Length: 258
Image (tube, rainbow, N blue to C red; front, side, top):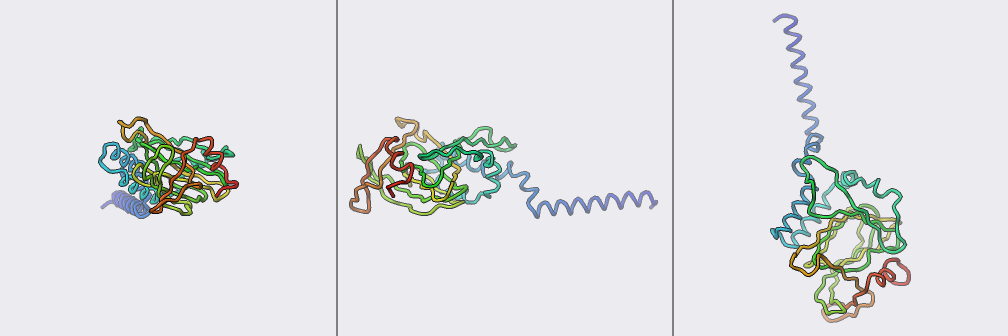
């Protein structure tokens, strides 16, 4: 073999070794797999597939809740924050004196991800002592991931509707910190109530409405007064429905109640 041929051979061999070592490093560090994640197993794609399955009635409402909550709790929060551009959305956030403020979330366009989604995305922001007031839902589902801060979270099941009142059953009463996920549907944990326990707090919310197209409304929300609920047999409460102005005045800012 000539010196030129030998040098060429050694150069190609060295390049091949370097290329192989680089690929091995990329795979071991998941750098390469992360780069193709949008085409395979990206969480946004999975969320959309769960929502499409619900639209087609391929899964039940509680099954959707289990799947979505599990996925939200597995997402790497730093990745999600970057994906939704949390820093920009939360900068100079106009926190209201009562209740919460929301901003729409727009997912970036990435190859392999849907151009449009089967669910709405929102960022909810609150300051200390403010609340997402206690309310129930009709013909919608939603899921909520705490991105920042801490909440006192309460959930109730709606047992029956008595016109001016709802009969409800307490199901969840916990402190929800960063990474905590919860959800609502007509079938499970229908009513929720978030009270901010940190200086500020944010949630990532995904929402679907018009689950049943034959229902009289695309969706409906009923605010309630759980603090003055009447205890009845079986650990249930009879609670009065409230209009949004009255509910915000009482529950939107923590003062004498709670």
